[in-house]
Length: 400
Ligand SMILES: Nc1nc2c(c(=O)[nH]1)N[C@H]1C(S)=C(S)[C@@H](COP(=O)(O)OP(=O)(O)OC[C@H]3O[C@@H](n4cnc5c(N)ncnc54)[C@H](O)[C@@H]3O)O[C@H]1N2
Ligand code: MOO
Image (cartoon, rainbow, N blue to C red; front, side, top):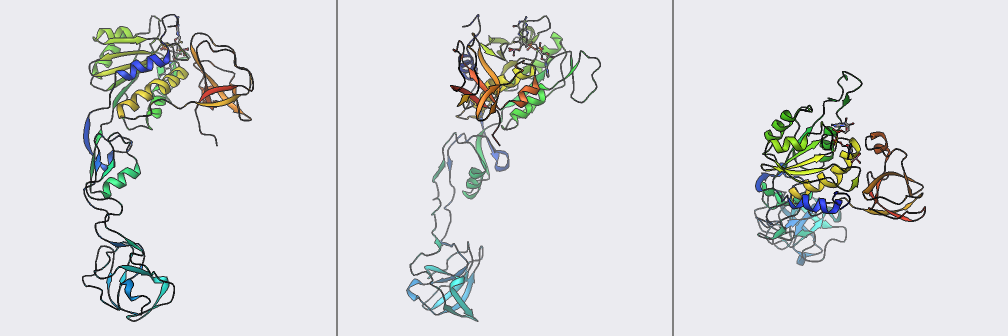
């Protein structure tokens, strides 16, 4: 520990240890994107259920090659031909239509000439049985394991589930997350500030935007004043959520009221203060069914701690495997000085492919945060890194 501060890795382990994937429930296919399967996905049918044509053309017997043929009917997608193809006979067939009894291959229409019901081979045509036919069950068989429990549901899996006969999936449900923004100085964005002591409340919208990439149910009550009883009542009101995220009031000032308010409603503090910069005053506690994650009010601190703690926690509640943002390596474009006892997340940008610090590292400076391409990760007590050496970083935007 650094002066009572917990290293970030340890803090994150403790935080993630409080959470588990949310309970399973069955949801319709149009509501499951981004959730994870709570049980294996098995098919309820063969796909395809019969031999189907892969091309538009004519269903024939390969033994009759190279024709000619007499066209005796049509098999369209969804409207099969009822008869049987005998020697010298063909049926018009479309892509996705059932191959009629008797036929064992399809000649594409570009390879034949049709005159009335007479059909002549003009191209190469298929010589082999099975040509241009998708066999029954060639994609998957009935009762086949299509995806393991824990798989994240994306558009491909939704399509597969639908094709396999499902209209719903059993998934870990959406986490319910309440975001409470506290501070007497806050006014809703866009509203006139009553005095220069007031500022627009940006953290709530920022956190909601960060969470929008994940399927969760957000509850965003109105801004809360620095009033202990009001904050306690709001905490209590949301104690049935999976997670209560607060911003502001996490530090040590007289008006930093998250911890006292949490105590007032019989919540507990698991740990407080992490050896990181920005983001030191993070608090983690419990209240009823909810985990309480107290983030700092400073906007950059709130952003960095949300990226490194809030998003991994929500991913865990969703049942994801990959929780923590990926770290990459890049060349330092300038010297990064030796670091102190707090792991440092330095706002940096790429210049000529190498990372340089942004001038303004203040944890309230949103303009520098927006200019940043990356957070350079400087471990606690790291030695100086010279220009040309390698640094670890977390990407904040895709390079365009
Ligand atoms: N004596 C000490 N003072 C401070 C310490 C400390 O250890 N000892 N820690 C500093 C650090 S580090 C941080 S980070 C801040 C965090 O403070 P709080 O979480 O208590 O946040 P507030 O004091 O309420 O606000 C800080 C700052 O952020 C602005 N803010 C608050 N909420 C929002 C919001 N929703 N949207 C935009 N901006 C917001 C607020 O106006 C303040 O300017 O404490 C240091 N102090
Ligand atoms: O956590 Mo604070 O972000 O160092 O200003």
